[in-house]
Image (cartoon, rainbow, N blue to C red):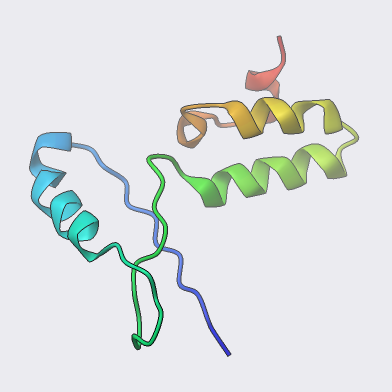
Length: 85
């Protein structure tokens, strides 16, 4: 059975983070036959995106789900109200 670990980095200084980003990118690979592998990355906070999608669905604001899905800086969105246009 495969298991997954999701890690979210908060990057306050992109230049200082560059060496860690390069290390992560070098570790990207298929998991076939390996005990572990980095198989996916995102430049945004996908856990927060999922939380906001769930909050939108639970609060009867399903129309915001597509907005949340397309948002390019979702990690800096603090509430569903910020997404309403």
